[in-house]
Length: 396
Image (cartoon, rainbow, N blue to C red):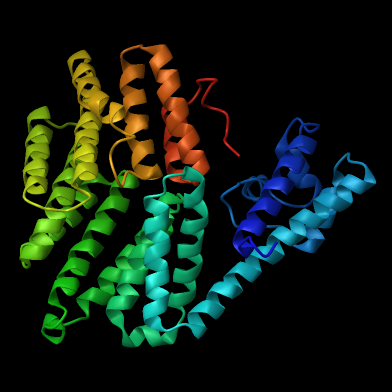
């Protein structure tokens, strides 16, 4: 097992016990009845069955579970062992992360978090992403407990933002919002005069904390609050030419998301925002620009889909088709970006009753999201097609 990380080994144990437990639970008509038989709630059991979850049973609860299941003695022993080892490995993974943080220099820890985040975001193979996101999560949580970070507030803020992004992907919007706002609160205590030598980084982080909060508020369906946070980010971006150049395409693109998240909006407004985003992107010289262009198209297409007319459905499909056809040729298009594009094109096909195409693209989107551990995207896709037999079954 030395070639595997502790976290990966824990994930394997967890997957095995979940599969075994799900199979055994087929004998129970209602999971709530089984949960009651072991003295726990249905919610607790559902957490145990989540592939992306962190809840594991104590040895005492594991013993009650295996005793309640109609399994041969040997299979009960195996199931008990996998449940206990999943918990043990998870704890060891967290302890290992704390040890790495305590032993490494601050610069090395931040570099490792950045590298893991980049590897997750831009992984060619979707299955590579989840272990890297989990590594970011473990390292960041350990680093935030390191009191020395209080002496390095910008590192503290960056760590919060890396954790925010990871929690967003792993479908933890409450935690993500907490860390975005924690980072913002720290930034507001700092005086820009004290950061003259690193002013660009300081201004970049000031925009980033407001942007991170806006993204999560939009995810939670709080469009008006998200819009206010975005306006704050736009105002802050004007203080630094470098920050303005980098952030304007992202800020205008996300304005499309917040505007179209309201009950009523105008197509003219979202088209104008898309124009501003593309124009701002054309003024940059960044290797990520082709990716950003595609995401601008996706945001505008998603707004068309929300508008809900036949004409807007056709416009969304026309906009997304070139993006989907070029998806394998665009550099720095990681699992999250591919899932977003495929999911939206599938939605356009569904809206136009192009069932075969919908089935193809929604399958690609869902498979990519599952392989990469993008639990938020998995949940969004399932919610969009609630009641459709091919989609509505829980992914575990």
